[in-house]
Length: 512
Length: 85
Image 1 (cartoon, rainbow over the protein chains, first blue to last red):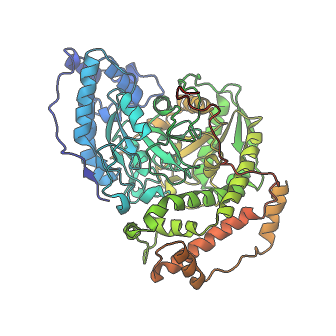
Image 2 (cartoon, chains in turn cyan, yellow):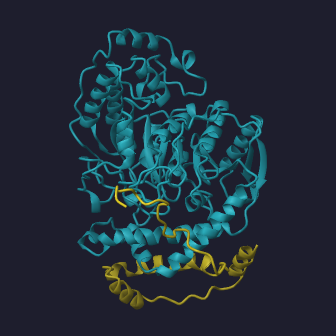
Image 3 (tube, one colour):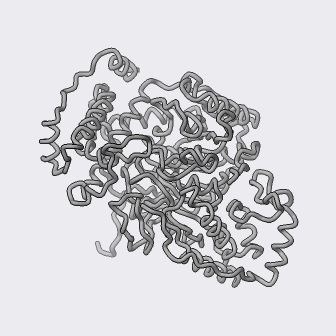
């Protein structure tokens, strides 16, 4: 599916946001916000020339300036669109750029803020969503020719929530066909453009790393938020199952799919979660829980009981990943956490098998509407092709169509026991730490258990955040995964924020 | 630990699996209204055999007789009010 703009890349001239706007901007530019106004855990957004690099701002930084009327949403959106125009051909993060709609929304946000109707920290902030999210009037392709001309008549629940909060939808982000797989064809890792961004929410990870937007929303059935977050050096949260509505999104598997936020920092991720979480009767798995401020927990791990995956469990992981993970555990220990090594019974292998069967059977049911019609011939073909970028969706769902209902339900029965076991494992723990990926940059090895699909099987929340960079090969991000019991999303985010407050990995930018 | 034993046994014995042939797959695909061309039969066959191996990993588990699937049907605790009794 070729990238294209949903409208003309029209540019409006820089406008005066308020009477004080220009003066304020000059003042900020001369006084690096990273040193004067931003807390130390925030990434600096000042270029080497001293000018503010608007697209590199975090949501917290941009929101602070927008709320004070020091930064115009139109100016910010224009800066982001310019950067996308310059870099997307190299990065391949966007399938569709909604430039006209984004600028119109930015102007509306600007008018609202001018008259004092500031909606909150996402007002005027450019964001993107994975191209599986329904967007009214903007095509939703799921990166497949099967849906290449699909223009939804309504917005996904998450898009509704983001829009209601005043966010500016910049465009639709790249993914592998129908979100199948951990490799996003045509989407390059900003840290090394010769490598892939991971997947399936690869466009979101790459766009954030390249500062092509300030926040994003992805999807995670087998680790598809956490994989690109780790691979691209950004933050990605798979929330508790049921916390975020999945209404209006092209699915893989109804009982494993999770939608969640991705951002440059844990605090930004918490802000996004606070906007998109909440009960939605249109999603039959939506949980009736009170939405909270996901920044309510202080970023403090003192006295917390943190489980750590035993060294033997990650023996096959890349040495650089093991080193970074070990260092990250030491940082949290140094912040006062009590570290407890955790080993798992061999039955964790059951989780991987269950996940695979449940995922493919549910996907086969969804895809039956295409497989049994002429649309079947529109899937990307794998005949005569090989390699990580080759789509195997049609073959996978056809194979899944032949698994019996009894076999599918056996997997769901085994899953129920796995969930029960996982609750027991967490009884003495506040959270569990592991590497997100077995290696940086999608390098080998590729061990059979990577500790990501577990959290899709049991529905517990899990976040990935940067915890280091490889030395050989150089400068590839490495991710730390933090998981906790259901609806402890705020705790997961608090631990992540505590870790960020003691480290600087999240402040690094790739040179593009 | 029962699971541990079951999985250990799996790793030490060949798991009996009925062999699927191209011809069987062709019939099964047609019965499911799938359009699997001759050039794609082998691809789907390999995929299906791989899924059977995943199934084998937990199919031998001694699930408690009363174990129910994780996705059982449920209704809201209170019916939606439409103003009528």
